[in-house]
Image (cartoon, rainbow, N blue to C red; front, side, top):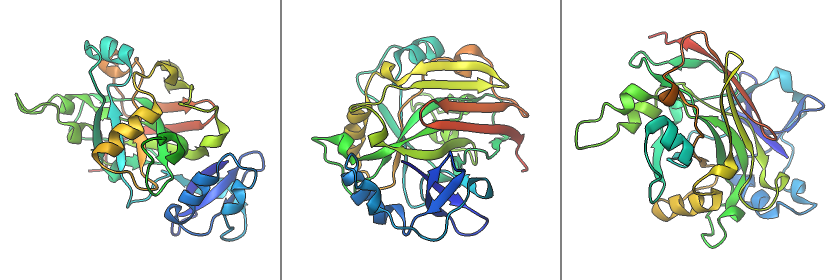
Length: 286
């Protein structure tokens, strides 16, 4: 099942997506209403009956696909999760545990929205990532995957020069690096957990700039898998239904190659089996 957050120019709404028919079916209520019962029902034949139609079906082409996370929910990023990325792009060894931090909701854009090039950086970088969407009201730490509604695609765009600008002895400035307005693609929709094999998903991660492949990895290479990351974060700050979790990026970023994003670049982040983000880098209006 594919579930998207959409707008037709009015208030955002949630909908199931039928790609073959090119339709979206609005869902009654918010993710906090239907997320927990749907997450609990995944794998059952009647799981879809949890959702109630919130109006007539609409053409997929008539709506804008928004990031599938509400403004009241948190965006959590777990970094340093691919050993090759750390070694090739940063010259670092794997840490003893993940690095987790928050990203501002204002950084998020939808699957076709432009990436706003922040005026303060000359090293805007790309990072394709699997993104976990929490569906349970409370995560069961003895079975973290049971609290996962599904997965979507993310491009954790980062300003590397700002990331390094933290005061000596203090560390990286991850807020400046990761939370620039309208930079981070998420979407195009959530694919529910029952569409994948049991356990942590093993999926290819691709990122292209102007048609050239820059990143080509696999979530099977994660240092810490999805259930570990969900439990790790939840132990420190409890997840709520609708929160999302970026799970790290493979090697091939601009940090390693020195090839950063420029105005006019067409950036495609793709996870086959989930979907594609296609975002064009534009000059910030301010």
